[in-house]
Amino acid sequence: MTDITLLDGGMGQELLARSGDDPTPLWATRVMLDHPGLVRDIHADYFAAGATIATTNTYAIHHDRLLRADLDQMFHTLYLRALAEAHEARAAHPGTRIAGSLGPLQASYRPDLTEPVAAAAPKYAEIARLLSPHVDLILIETAASIEAAEGAVIGAQAAGKPVWLSVSVDDRDGLKLRSGEPVADLQRLLEHPIAALLANCSVPEAMADALAALKPMGKPFGAYANGFTHISGNFLKDAPTVKELTHRHDLTPEKYADFALRWVAQGATIVGGCCEVGPAHIRHLKGRLIAEGHRIV
Image (cartoon, rainbow, N blue to C red; front, side, top):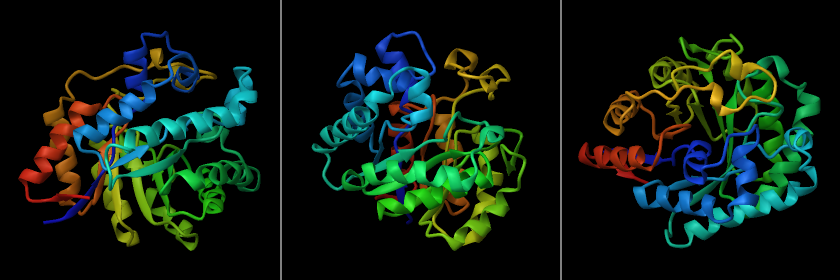
């Protein structure tokens, strides 16, 4: 029997489906102003499905993104709202945790836009200090290069909480980050305090190789994949929306659980889902994990 931390699934795509709004570059952030309570409801559904960690809806709340949408004056308000909705959902599920999400600066999957560590770290530190009183850990998500990961890891230390680093890997070669750098090169970042290493927001087929590269680093490790066919070229342009991404129809809860159980067989102790992986996937995954004798923690 293995103790498994069961993360939640994707937030942004669930918000899009439930709100009925047209996607914009900041759709998952704007929804907290236009549909208060919807983020809380999604967190609650993931907890009810068996997740033991809620990841805050703070992935895209960066000054650079808000400025483009003329929303930077709402920076602190958006953080407090996201944190409040996570706590409201957790109130009915004692023993669960909240992970404060730190997404990439500028854009996702764009290592070409990576800011130098010296510039990025203070920006992440500002957010880490905001999150710190309200979260149990910091989850850096979708880091696409070594430099992007390092800036986030250094800045995240300002929270004084455990830092989990999750990277996004090449959909066709899970041994490489989206920058083309080897996942194994993350080893040098272990000079900084990192409590866990993960891979996220890549296709599930790429995760086994990513985990094989993370495992020798000696930290708790895991994965949470997305349900897109691939990251399209149009999505890698400036200010894209999810209209540029294609949802795959074959990734049923059963099939996703098959992938996740193979990750657990590799030694992963942290699993969950990213974009297009919803509460039904997490519920089925919990059942399969318990059926195989694992304990959800």
